[in-house]
Length: 86
Image (cartoon, rainbow, N blue to C red):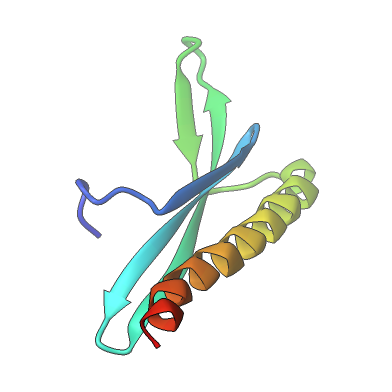
């Protein structure tokens, strides 16, 4: 993935967040999701990690559920221009 590519959407429930990525192929657009957890390091600066604590798991599940809903909305929006042309 290119560093200049921006996600199609972001979902965040601190400290867990997710980025939804649109991947265009010849067969259409596919969506993928990356998750991260924010934390403060010993110097007080915010950092991110792809490792989750046991206490993060229910929150991560909620973020995943919200991502599923958002991807369904994005897919519906992807289909609308085709329906208008018909």
